[in-house]
Length: 252
Image 1 (cartoon, rainbow, N blue to C red):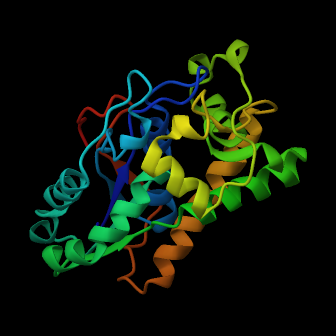
Image 2: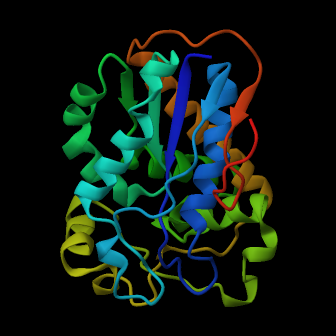
C-alpha cells in the first residue's frame, strides 16, 4: 500500500433541510470510492471542520483559519513517507476549501517531499459535473447551485436519508453562480446572496441522482490524479478505511 487519500469536509449550515455535517459525510463516502478506484489505498480520517468564515452568519457553522487547515494537512501526511507511502491525494467535499488549498498547495508539496502530493481544487468542475448529471437524469440542471442544492441533497438521500428534512425544502439563490457571485459570498458572507443559505434548489432530489453525482465526481478526481503523473498505486481491489462516519479511528 503506497497511496493515501485525505478527505476534507466542513461543519457549516446547509439550509433548513440538511445537517451541519453534510460536507464531512460526503467526504467520507467519496474518499472510499476514490481509494477503491485508485487501487489498494489508505483512507485517512476526514478533516471535519474546514475554511467556512462566509457561513458564520448562520448558527452552528464552524471555521478553521486557512493556516490551521494547511497545518492539519501537513500534520496528517507528515509521517507517511516514513511508513513507506509514496503519494497522497487531497480533495475537499466542501468547495469553500478550494481557494485556500490553492494558496498553500506548493508549500505543502515542498514540505511533504519526498511524498508526492496531488490536490484537487477545481470546484467549478464539480458544480459543472453535478449540473450535467442532474440535467441528464432529471432535466433539473438549473436546480444545481453548489450548496444545499438538488445535488448535495441527492447525495445525502443516497447516504443518510434519515438526515434529510424533505418537509423543509426551500429554493435558494438560483441565479448564475460565477466568480463574481462567489467573491461576494466570500467577502460579505453567503447570507448576502442567499438569506436561507442555499445556492440552488433542493427540490427534485433523489437517491438515484445522488449515486450518479458521487460516481461522476469520483471519476473526476481520479482522472485528475492520473493526469498529474504521480506514482502508480499498487494493484489491488480493496481500500483500507481508518474512519467511520463519526470520524473516529477504527481498526484497519
